[in-house]
Image 1 (tube, rainbow, N blue to C red):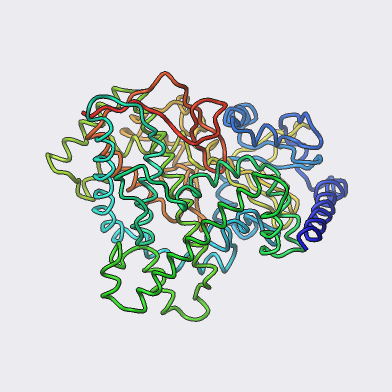
Image 2: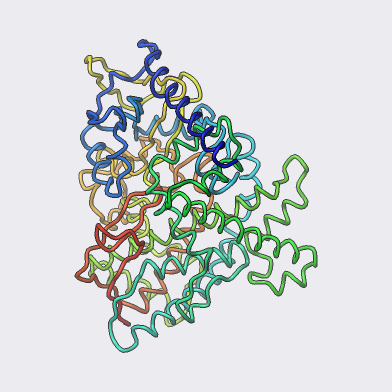
Length: 544
C-alpha cells in the first residue's frame, strides 16, 4: 500500500513540476510577466537560486541581494521557473493588507506545514483563518498580558536560581540557547496551555520540548520536501502523505515525521486533560497549572459557547496548540539568545542596561508590568535586536490571479523602462523580504546594518512614516503585518523583557573563544561553528 502511494506521489510530483515549472513558463504571455526586471544570474537551470537561498549560511546572500538589486528583483526557481523578490513598502502593504486575498500563503490543496502541524493559524486561509483568529484574539489582550507578567517573573526566578547553582563558584560556560528554549517552553506551557514542562531542578528533557526545538533545524535540511508535498497534495490527502513520509527511504524525512507525530500526540494528551477539567468545573481548573486562565483553557471555553459556524474542530484545536507552541518557542528563545550574544559583544551596552533594570527593580524581585514595558533602554535593545535580526526573515506569497503589484518607487527594467507596478502572472511565487525592509538604508539611514539601540531613543527617520510600512510593531516587519501578522507579538515582547530583566540583574554574559554561527532556516538558530548541526549557543556566565 505504501509503495503504491509512494509511486503515485512521485508521478504526481513529476507531472505537476513539468506543468508548473516548464510548460506554464513557456506558455506565459510575454506581455504579462516580470522577466525584464533585473536580478542575479542563476548558475543552474534545474535548481535555480535555491542552493544560495536555502543554504544554512544564506543570510549573506539575502543581504547581498537587497543591497545590490534594491527593493524589487527577479530570482529563478527550480527547472527555470521565475520568482519575484521584494521589500518595497507599497508592495508589502498591498500583499499583506490592501489585497491580501489576492496573495495567499498557499494555492495548492496542502503544504508541508499543513501536513506537519495541521490546520492552525499558520497554515489556514480565508474564512477559516479569520474564524480561528477571532476566537484567539481576546487571549492576547493587554489585560491578559498583565496576568502573565507575574507568571513570567516567577518562571524567570526559577531559571535564575538554576543557573546560579552552576556559576556559584565562578564563571562557567553554559548553553544559553538551551536555557532560553527551556524558559520559553515553560512560559508558553504555563501561560498557553496551563501545563508545566520543566521544574528547572535538573537537566530534564521533555519529548515535546525537544521535538519543537528540533523542528526548524531538521526541516531546514529538507530543502525540496515542500515542493514534493505541494505537488502530491493535488491527488493525496494529508493523512496519506503522512503515511508515505513515515516510511519514506530517507532518515531525515522520517525524523521530521517523528517530530510532527510527537507534537500532535502530546498536544492531544494535554488538550484531553484540559477538556476533562473543564467538564468537572471551576474547582478542577483551580488545581491545574494556570488555574484555568491559560490561553488553551480560555480558547476551549470560548469554543464551547461559540456558534456552530464559529466552533473549531478537534483537529483545529490541536493545530492551534502546535502552532502556538512552535511559533512562540523558537522565535522568542532564539531572539533572547541573539540579544544576550549582542550584549556579550557590547559590554558597555550590557552594563548600561543592567543599571536601568536594577534601578527599576529598586531591591524588589519583580518589576510592575507598566514600569517594565516603559523601560526605555530595555525597549530599545529589544526593538533593535528584532529589527536587525528578525527570527523569521522572509515570507512567501503566491499570486492567486494575474495582478499588477504597485511599487512605492519605480524600478528600471532591462529595457530601460521605468515601472511603477510589476505585472505578476497567476501562480507566481513572491518572496517578501521582511529583513530586507528592516535594514533598508533608504528608510533607516546609512547605519541601517549596525546594531545600535540608541537609535530608538531619538526620533526615527521621517522616511519611515512616509513609507507607510504595514508593520504591527514600530515600523519593523519582523512580526509581519495585516490579518496574518503574528498574533502573539506582544506576548513575545513581554517574555523577552521579563527574562532579560531577571538575567541581567543576576548575571554577566561574556563571549567564549568558540565561534557562534547563526543559521538560516524558517526560524534562524545558533550553532557552535559551521560544522555543527546542534542548536546551541555557549557563553561564559558569572554571577553579578
